[in-house]
Length: 96
Image (spheres, rainbow, N blue to C red):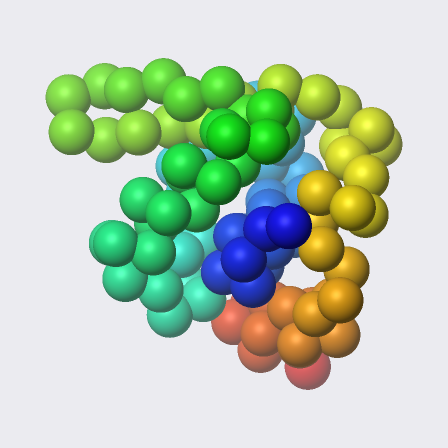
């Protein structure tokens, strides 16, 4: 099961349509209030479950979806904390 920080980062990427290309997870992490260490964990978790491929340019890492957004299952996302995760994303992006 993915950690709440990883869930929030993934949901933000899904909601913003970023999973259709390559994205920098640190941008969303800053908006969600996460540290650089948390970003590292997010990248590691998403990669470990096969949801993303990691590319690196200098010191910056980028993610690319390894699966389509429609094939990401609830089990990988750990839907137990879905409400809290969605609330955090909504606050970070001024949606509620």
